[in-house]
Image (cartoon, rainbow, N blue to C red):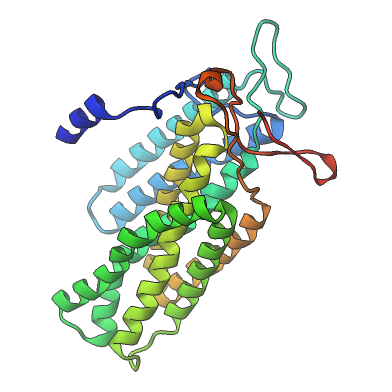
Length: 322
C-alpha cells in the first residue's frame, strides 16, 4: 500500500514528449471482426473455469464445505455471463459472423490481429503458469526423491525461482536487441526441452546435475515470460492494459491446470504435460509476426498510428499502420 502511494506520485504513463491515449471504450477488450469476437468470448471460459476448479480442490482438502462450492459455482456462472455481456456490448459494432460494420455515428472497431493476443495467452499459460506450478511443488518433489531435509530441498528448489532474477529481464532485453519473435521461439523451445529433461531425473542422478537441469529449464521458461511482455505492448497501444491483463490472467489459468494434473497423476506426468503444452506453444509462435515499432516525432505522436503490429494481407503481404 505504501508503494502504491509512491507509484501514484512518481510513475508516469508515458515517456516525456509522448501522448497517453486511453482506449475508446472500457469494460471489455475491443476486437476487429466477428471471428475475433467469438474467440474472445470463448477465452473467458478458462478464466472462470480455473476459479471453479480451485473451489472444487478446496472442497477436496476440506477447507471449504460442499454447499459453499455450489454457491461459488453459481456466482462464477453469473460472472461469466456478465463478462460475455460486456464483451458483446462493447463490440456491438462488430457482426458475429461477418465483416465489421460500425453503426451510424459510431467509430469503427480497432483494427489489429487478435490471433497474436491468443498466441501470447497460450505462451504465458505455459511459461508463467508452469513457473508458478513448479515453484509450488519442486522442493517437496526433491525432498521425496532424494530423501533430503526440508531445508536443503527448499534451498535447491529456490534455484528454479532464482533464475527469474536473471532470465525474465534478459528475455525482454534480448527481444529488444535481437528480435522479439526469435527470442520467444528459442525460449519456448528451451522450456519444452527442459521439462522433458526434468522428466528423466531419477534417484540415481547426482544433485549438481539435477540442479543444472532445473536451473537451465527455469532460465528458458522465465526468459519466455520477459519475451512475452516484450511483444504485448506493441499489438495495439491504446489497448495495451487490457491486452496485458488478459495475457497475465492466462498465467494463472496455466498454473491451475498444471497443478490439477499433478493432483490427479504423478510428477512425471505433470512435467510431461508441461513439455507437451510447451511444444504446442512453440508451434503457435511460428504464427507470430515480428512487431515493428513505428518511429514518429514527439510532436506528431498524438496523430501517430495506434498500432505497431503488422496486419496480414492476402498474398502474404503485411501492412504497417503508420
